[in-house]
Length: 300
Image (cartoon, rainbow, N blue to C red; front, top):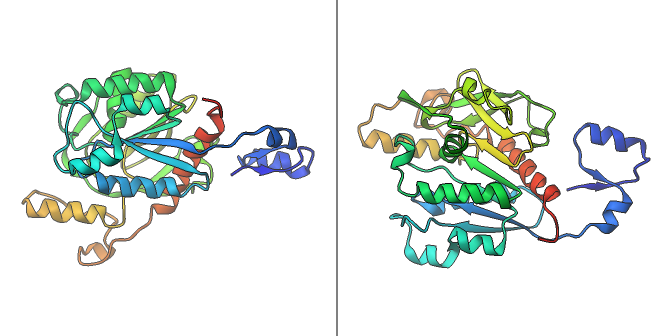
């Protein structure tokens, strides 16, 4: 939340230099306040699990937020009750009539498929094109980030021979940006994926900037120069036990799966996993929501 202080207070310049949002009296008395509308396009089959993870991230902000959910109209999910979808979800065309301040597009279990083979790709293209014109900022997560980068920049994904299943350490590549405010110099992020994108492909596009990466896991966070589009390539919103559930599920399928690295204490799946990424994940979501709040007009 912003701090209202006199603009001639000595601390004013210091706080602005430290990326603390401050406002003077003139702006404070003219500021209109309303709830921020964050919509989530949920592409996951088990939608309630994803709802829980993302709502917890959004909740970390002190702002008043209205959260809504969007479903695809061209593809019907098979693992969520129709009554749940009917009660809590809208199509994108219905949502855009109500107005979206910020949009989150989730990951999807189609990572190994060619983009063109995804049944709802054309609908997703329509949503992404509309978001480009009408939404303050869109946050793309994992596969959705890959889909946008492919659709608009022709940036391809590359498949690994074995599933990448680690808790990796990441660093900033651009500290002077509001989206990275107060994140630790080094922080961890869960990875569960089969594909990746190349840093050199991203650097070919001058309107994109790499915000965070890892020596072991390559590029993690990307944004357009104006932060209208933010790409998170992996899973900071994961719960403590999400990777564990995936690991045991894959074991039951007799897949050749490694124990997630830097996850179970002493590398023993019988132990409760370490939770070492939550604080930085919540801080990032807080920063993104604050960016949407500060740049969205009160009168829509």
